[in-house]
Length: 119
Image 1 (cartoon, one colour):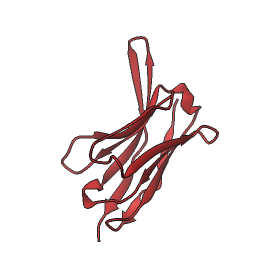
Image 2 (cartoon, rainbow, N blue to C red):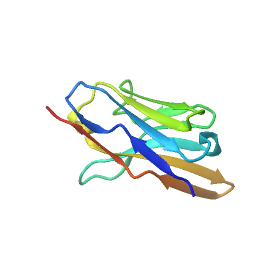
Image 3 (cartoon, rainbow, N blue to C red):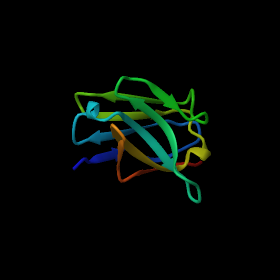
Image 4 (tube, rainbow, N blue to C red):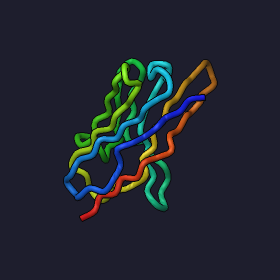
């Protein structure tokens, strides 16, 4: 059973920074993609950033230039560095790990961590 444990959320003022961490229970290279999603109240869950096992990353337009996804294979951890935070970034952030074997896609999710941007 795969476990993803997020940490690093909290309350921050606009313009501030936070770093989220997602620790996996097995090698992060066993997943095709790992990423961060977020869900704000009354909105659908959306992709924030993702990184493939090969190291290719992509970002939502709303966070480009402000957020950076990275990983530490030895720690089996993926990070999301969030800078220049805006109130619109307030949401529950979820770590996701995805495996794709032929035509079968399996998604694993963390429990979520709250990020609140407010003065």
